[in-house]
Image 1 (cartoon, rainbow, N blue to C red):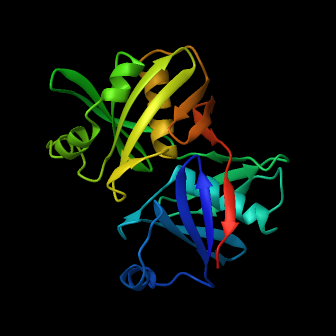
Image 2: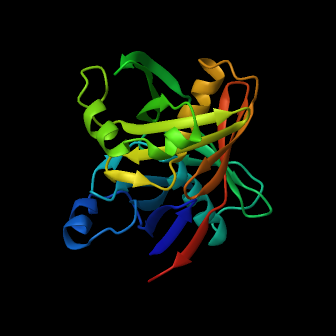
Length: 246
């Protein structure tokens, strides 16, 4: 078992020989103190990940979890550096690479804007990046810091037009810098970082807020990550650390 930390987003990674239905039993017998648990298995010379939130619910995609998997495989000499590698997820296949400095980059699922609506007099957007996100912009970093996040997460997901399993995001931006807070479904609290949330907000900047940039530094409570665009493809890059614990 290995613990990985991707900008404060923490995961347990465990390998098994093949896809199996032992996840429910593991959660019945163990308490997960991290944000999520990832099971890895290899089939037909390709690695696959199954991601579960700490409450035992399955999620189709986790950006920081995928970055952690690539770094885990790289650090355990299971994939080479500087080579794009395909990884199977519940969402579908994605690609990732670990550079010579040991920093992983993931080609993320294409963001999709589901809808925009007015919530309490403020514009709110719903974006899917493998998993659904709802996002609201703040007018300043002070407003971001003081935002009543728990109430926002709890109440907005009761809206008929918001998927109930959505993650909730609030953000502020200046030029190519984004400050982001995310309350994650399945973790049921604010996490220090969320990779799909970083990409969802970057997509909004490019496609609805008319940003002239193609690369952003996203500041999260757990540290900085980079989101970049190349021909409508979104890439998530940032440091990961892993420590074998058992």
